[in-house]
Length: 300
Image (cartoon, rainbow, N blue to C red):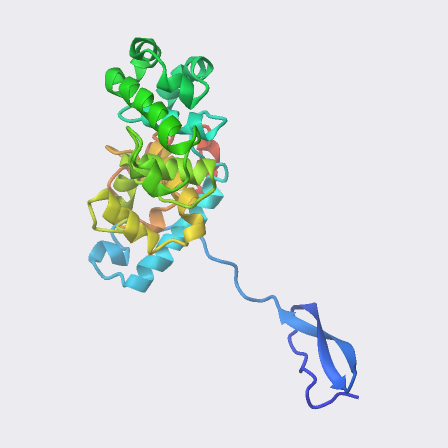
């Protein structure tokens, strides 16, 4: 017989949850309690919108609206780019650190072409610390600014040996003391080698968060803090990867593929590039191209 403190069981579309309910002194019974499953799943960006109709494009978006939109953008990009990652090749924190230093003012593709030989020749901080600058320059020349980068790698190796026991540090304040390492590089290393959330504010990231009207800030550190206030901390590293993937494949600097963009409903800048599906689709690149177009509902 039910007692006064027994829970009421309601809900037609539900799953059972087992709880212990006190009924009599020194005794208990197991009650099957209904948990409602009808709450809607977190939404993704809708795939229809007219150019210029987003509230943010008219300066009418609230702070709460912006945060909701930023998180919806992140969820949508997670579905579009489930394998988003750092596109530099590496197997250790040191390799990622070196590759990221080399990536300044060049492409990840170019860096990945020179790092196999570099990593084989210089596998440890001690190897960089004692290296001949000429030897490093010859290997990394295709990445550009090779003299400065070679000097940074030697100095980086020396500082790792003298100040950090030959290990790549994890603290942001420690990483930025290394030659050639700024906040962007530090967040790449922390987020990908050590699974410590961080926002990588590179040129793609800056360009896209402005185009998406997620912030008006222009200083990279200010941008980092502004976006950190919108996106959940656990998502920072992956949000960076997803935004960068979008910038490299869809939202190009000169002519974005607006008509084939999975974020077109949530983008106040929709219309900056071709909005016609066929013309826009021709501008989408990368190994995920077919998936991107299918997600956006655009045929080949």
